[in-house]
Length: 123
Image 1 (cartoon, rainbow, N blue to C red):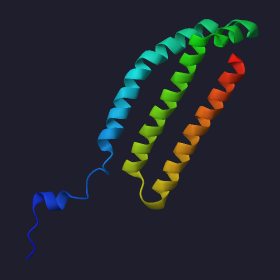
Image 2 (tube, rainbow, N blue to C red):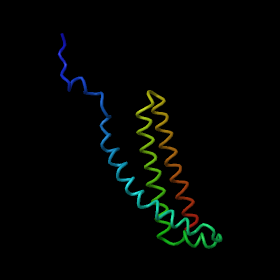
Image 3 (cartoon, rainbow, N blue to C red):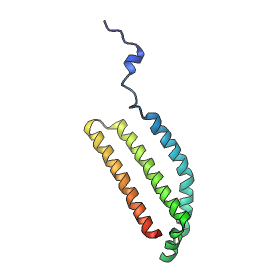
Image 4 (cartoon, rainbow, N blue to C red):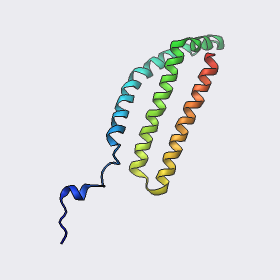
C-alpha cells in the first residue's frame, strides 16, 4: 500500500514555476498602459485631421515619438504574455509550442514594424 501526502499528490501538477512572474508582469504592464493609452489617444487624436506635414511634425517631436514607442512596446508585450498564458491554459502538446512560438514571433514582428514606421516618421 502506497501512502501519499497531499503535498506529494500536488507536486508537478501546478504552475510551471513562472505563474507569479507572469501575474506581476501583467499587473505592472496593465498599470503602465492605464497611463500610456490615454496620453497616446490624446496625441493621436490631436493629430487626426491635420495635414501630412502637421502629423509628421507632431511625431517628429521627442515626447510624442517616445510615448508612441512605449505604448507600442508595452501594449504588444502585454498581449504577448496574455496570449501565452491563455495558450498554456488551453492548448496541449506540440500545438501549444507552435502557438507560443507564433505569438512570440508575431509580437516581435509587430514591435519591429511599428518602431521602423515610427523611426521613418520621426527622422
